[in-house]
Amino acid sequence: MKNISLLILVFFSCALGFTQERNTDSLQKANDIGKRKSFIAIPTLTYNTSFGVMFGGMASYFYHLNKKDTISPLSSSGLIATYTSNKSWFLILPNTFYFKEDKYRAKLVGGLGSIEFQTFVDWNDVIGELPPGILPPNLDGAFVDFNNVFAFLYAQFIAKVYKDYYVGANLLVSNTKTTFDLPTNPEDDQTLFGFGLTVEKDSRNSQFTPTSGNNGKLVTNHFLERLGSTSNYSNFNFQFNQYYPLKDKNTIMWRLYAQVATGDVPFSGQNVVGRDDLRGYSNGKNRANQVYDAQTEYRHWLNDKWGFVAFGGIATAVNNFGDLSFNNLLPAAGAGIRFAALPKSNINIGIDAAVGKEDWGVYFRIGEAFIR
Image (cartoon, rainbow, N blue to C red):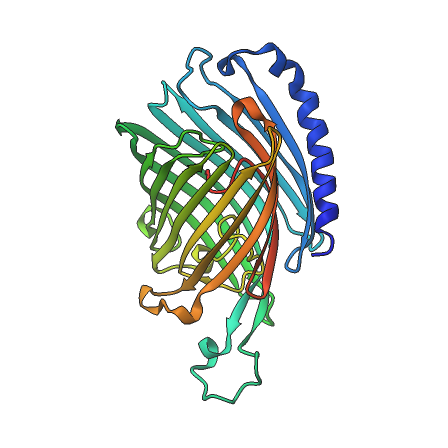
């Protein structure tokens, strides 16, 4: 944690120079956001106990598909690239499209990589429930290292059906090969072809920095062996965000999130607390078929360029809904800094630091949390 101040300095000194150099002329000359194209790139440099030193970059290009369409939000095409000192790497290409006066929305995301990570094995899961006092205190299991090589392509298309409501479909094709660092080097090779339904409600006043309204999503994916998948299982993703403006420079929001896998769930199909949702967990210990969390966040702007956020929440990871208990709740809290890289487009960049139960994390971002 002692290196976070240095990471913040490096991040903002590089990001400020790059975004201003590429956008000053266009921002001065453009009076209409529909005629502007904007590019942001930021370096990423961080550290955690799972991956070691992590460095790379994030870039996003924002544009209107039709310059005459002043109703649709800005579409975006991005790149996220990272390499770590434990020899993990990944490349993600996210694209989000808004067109026909926001009557249609689409996503196209592709990626590949090789991740050196770990999972936590509970001794009770391996050898059965043990009597109290058999194991030494605080020795309830051990981490097992694994390598996950993956490639995926995700596509989604939704159409407005009534006021703020959208309905559509999504498709996921992926291949993962997981090799565990155990004496026999067991492998789990999964080829998945999934399809599902997407339902979304979106009354936010901004796609990138919302201050009012709400956004709810339900996305399902079903993987069937008869369609070419290695396993038969389903995944359900639910999220709901509510935003409340507090005077001119303050926003408070709350969020509910659930990621539920059912059926013959493979290891690569399980869900992990943390990642890009509940900030503060990065070591992969809390992994199960189902993850639930609730969060709140306060956002405040000090002036036209700089602001900060403070956030907190709780989560749990269980294999079955009936296993939910106050005993396995995972708290987290943190704060972050924001810089208005493209203020006329409501696009910010930022860095967050958060602490969880026996874990922590540092997070770089273009845009705010929970906008994907």
